[in-house]
Image (cartoon, rainbow, N blue to C red; front, side, top):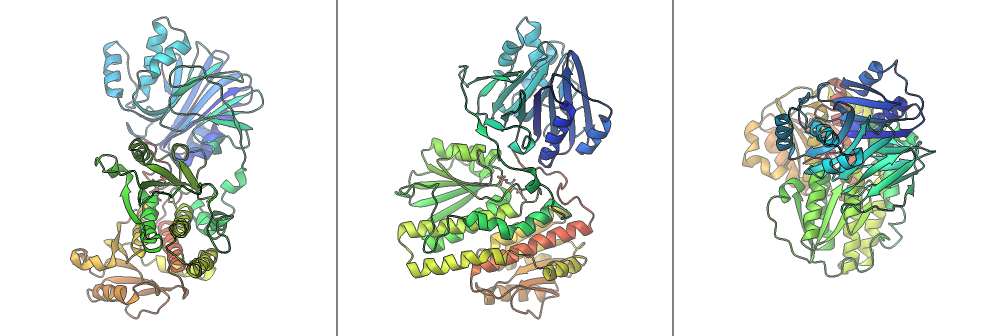
Length: 603
Ligand code: F6R
C-alpha cells in the first residue's frame, strides 16, 4: 500500500530517497515524507499530495556525507491524508516509517497516553516510535529497545526506524508487509519493492516474515522470528528502469494497454510448444490426485479467476470454484485435500489473497500462484508459481496483468486437460494455433483507438453503465465496468446479460448506457435478444461485435474470429480504451485515480 525507502551510506540521501519513492508513488500518494540523520543532526520534511510537493519543500536541503535516511509515500489507512499523519513519525529523537496496520495500536496508544506521551497524529504508526523511546528511556540500548517494541506489535507491518542515539544505524522489521534489503558500494538500501533500488543496489535480500535487525555502515545483522542471528544470501538484482517509463504514451495505463500484445508473447515463451503446453515450474506429478480447483483473488485478478472457471470446467473437465479472497477468509470454508488452491495476484502482496493462501496451506491443500512479481510474498508462500511475465505494471488500473493472467489460465486449463487426458491432439493443436494468434488480437489499431476516442465524448454523463456479457464474457463485463469506475468515477456494473430482466432492467431509460459484449463465437443469438430487450426500453446501447447490430446507438466492430478467446481479448482492449478515453475527457488522473493504491497490503 504505502512505499518505504531507507539508506545507510555516504551518498546524497535526499536524492536516493526521493528517487526511490518516485518508483513507489503509484502504491500510495496521499502524502510523503523523508527523515535524515547526518552526524547528530535530525532533519525531516513532509508534504501532502504527490511527491513533487515534497521535492519542492525540501529543494534547498542537501545531505552529503555518511548518514542514515528513511522515506515513505502514504496511502491512508488510519487518519486523514494530512501532514501530521504523513510518515516519518517523530519521537523526541527518533523517526519511524511503516507499511501495514498495527492492529493493537489503540490499546498501545492508550497505554502510552496514560504514561504521559503526547501524540501528534491519528495514525497507528506513531505508537512504534513512542514505544521505542519509552524502552530507550528505561535504560535499554537502541537495538534492545527496538526488539522490545516490535514484540508488542500485532498485525502486518514493515518498518524502519532511525534514532539519534545510534546515528549510524537503521533498525528494520518485517511481518506480513513486503521489505527487502539492497546492497551497493559500501552502502545499504531498504525498500518495500525492488523497483525503488533498481540501478542502485547490486544485490538484494527479500526479508521473511518475523525477521528484524539493523544495518550499520554496510553491515547487516539479521535475526529470525525466534531471535536467532541468521546468515542470509543475497541475489543479484537485475532489470532496468527504462521499461518502467512511459515510452511516449500519455499515461502508464495507455502504454500498458498497447504493450499487451507483446507481453503475452513472453507469457507463452517456452510454454506453448508445437503440440503441447509445458510449464517447467510445475513438477510432472503436480496435478496427481487433484480432483477440483479453488481460486481465490481480489479485484481484477478475481475477474481473471472467474474467466478461468469457465475454461477449467469446459476444457479440462475439472470442477473449479472461485471466491473473493476477503470473503473466503472468514466464511469458515470446507476444504478437501484433493483440491488445488490457486491464488491470482498481479503484485503478489495483496493481504487478503495472501491470508487466504495461508489458510488453505494450513488446511493441507496444495497451492499454486499465478503472479506477476517473482519473490513476492504470495509466490514465496505457494508450493509452485507461474509468473505472468507482464513486466512492471504501473497504472493503478490493471490492464496487462489481466491479459497475461487470463492467457496463462487458458494455457493452464489446456495443460490440465492434457494431463487428465480429456482432450485429443487435434483439439490441442487448434487451441495452440489460437493461442499464437492472441498477440494479434491484442494489438491496438490506431483506427480503433481513434474511433473510441471520438465515441467517448457521448459517455461522460448518464446515471450509470451496464457492461453485459454471457459466459466468459460476463467476467469480462465485470472487468470492463471495474476499469471504467476506477478511473472515470462513473457508476458502472458488470452483469450477466441474461440476468438483466430479473431486476436491473427497471433502470433502463435513455440515460442508462449499456456496453454490450456480443461475440460471434459464443451465444450470439442469446445475447442479441437480451440487448433487444434493453433497446426496447430506450437504453443507449454501445455494441461491441463483429456483426453489425442495427439497434445499437453506437457500434464498435471487432474482427471476425474463429476462437472465443481471441474475441475475448479484442473486446477487452476495447473496454480498456473506452475507460481510458472517458477518464481523459473527464480530466481525471488516469494513472493515479483517487482513493486507490496499486498494491493493497492491508486487509
Ligand atoms: C483494478 C486492480 C485491483 C487489483 C486488486 C488485486 O484495476 O488493479 O482490483 O486487481 O487489488 O491486486 P493483485 O492482483 O495485486 O492481488
